[in-house]
Length: 305
Ligand code: ATP
Ligand code: RIB
Image (cartoon, rainbow, N blue to C red):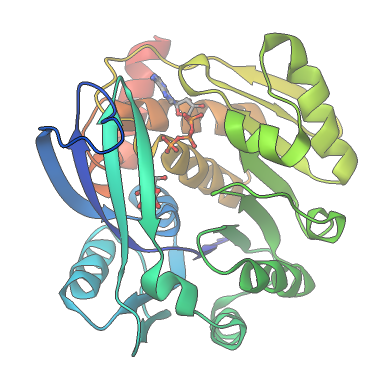
């Protein structure tokens, strides 16, 4: 069976709800504080592992109580953490999240996520990877490490997927190491200069395709669009009561990778990912909100009958 190897960030998320975004210099009350394990790398790995995919994580935490908690949670969700390293000098990554009007704003303290080295990543990949496995990463680790890791993974014969978040422009040579890129609307705009509103869907998809990789653009409550050399796809989002969008994109990506590992048809994979992500937004938190395969499957059955 193909397995998923994720190189990515591990954070403790401190999340609080507000009625509006505080103004400059203002202190205001929030509500429904929640602390739970997050980080794009961790969340995407957990989404795949909860969906019954053999999942390994390469990352770094601090030698502190938050790092211990992060590792405990990841293991409990079924992620293999043998290649999560511990930093001697940096503390575990932190994300301060403000939830407001069914959306979020996030400030990161990278901490140990920025302390990972390319040698640690290459050694880990050398030990875990078999040709044909999947390699998934984001941009919450140092860009230089992610870039070289993608090239190394490609050289090992892995299928590579990048979620370029937080967004920054990529060089052409990075696109050449990618099989898939998965962006949300704002990431799409930063990378391509095209905001993917309805009338620019095709143009945005085409832009990434011309760079040399397959592309998925997630559109929040409007679902997702995707394109390979052979086909275009459009998947609507499922209607749910939105409580917390944290980790929606991560769940989508982890669930999509599960389906790629199982060599599923792309339409089925996008649909499965969309059902899983809609369950996440109907719950509070990041990793604690991500559904298991059984939950997603049951939800799909209920909505497709
Ligand atoms: P985040 O950064 O909040 O984790 P994102 O911005 O990376 O998410 P989105 O495009 O917001 O990603 O969402 C990813 C997918 O999650 C969407 O394609 C959709 O399938 C699902 N989704 C997001 N928001 C909603 C919603 N309000 N209702 C139903 N499904 C949603
Ligand atoms: O995508 C959501 C994640 O982004 C949060 O869990 C937070 O830790 C940040 O990395």
